[in-house]
Image 1 (spheres, one colour):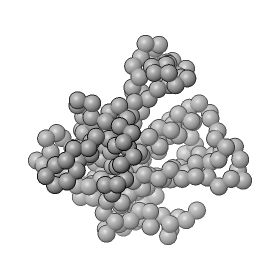
Image 2 (cartoon, rainbow, N blue to C red):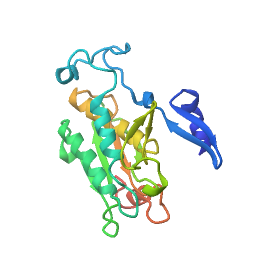
Image 3 (cartoon, one colour):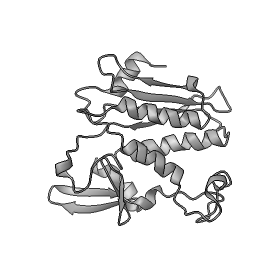
Image 4 (cartoon, one colour):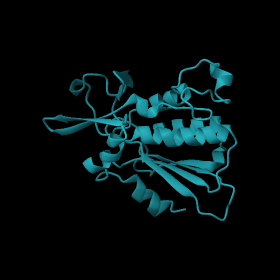
Length: 220
């Protein structure tokens, strides 16, 4: 797992410090900054400036709001709900224009709070198999007394984001979801379709493994 952080660390997205229990990785807020328009730093995006105005900052508040909502939705096994988080992301996709029929929140009857979101975004060439964007939305337990900050409140401090799941794995889940939101808003069609899978049970697979359950019960 440590080796997986090598590339984002080298790229400057993640900062590493060595603690008593081993290396600690923190997600830089700058890793989630968004540059619109033609890619120049701070260039306005023609879609967003309708709402934001010309002189906006480079941080995309639309993405940040999505990211905050997902991070602040408790998805621990004990008291959280992946199903609630999946439903919130599905609602955002639908508000962006994706039809409700293109997505499902799926959960086994015995684990109703361990739901996953599967959403299909069409491509221009239906003969090509879609690619999958996979991220898990469940998180490890976090007791308030063990944290300096509330683990379920997204905090940006000194250039870093702090919260349970801020990097693993809700940053990736938020980026994938926001991608489909922006594509849908802009009526963009990639050549190949995309399937978004926001799954549950990665952190506690001994209890329930969402990917395995989906493959066994909803292979299509």
